[in-house]
Amino acid sequence: MIKVVPTIFTAAVLAALLSSCAQVSPATQTLAPNSIRVTFKNTTTDEVLARIGKKCSQVGGVVKEATADYLVCTRRLSDTDAELVNIPVATVHSAKPENRMKFTASKVDANVVVTTLQWAEVKGKSGDWTQIEMGHAKQKANMKKIMLSIGAI
Image (cartoon, rainbow, N blue to C red):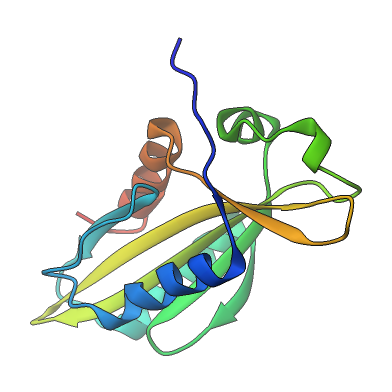
């Protein structure tokens, strides 16, 4: 059995990771371990983000933030995903861990390239939220499956 070791990010490191998704060309962007990249053929950024937003609500999530080129979807972590993230029980306080997914869309010719970034947020005893990378192969495969279900290739 493979043991997944979570990576805990400080708020500053996570902010840098999130902002780097929007600043680098999708053709040259290096993917973070908790990211995937997919392409939507012959469409617009608005259309793709609308599809992603709709899918977010269909899977029990809520769009927490949206701009012209990205959106962030949040949902409670399932017990299976929480186990894959290997969240230490001592770090969880009153709130269940949340799965956060950022979808950054970039127009490339007639296509739209979407890069995802996925992490969990856990509320600790002090009330602070801690970010934990979600880069397990099963989580990435599920994200890819969701993207394919809404038209990605």
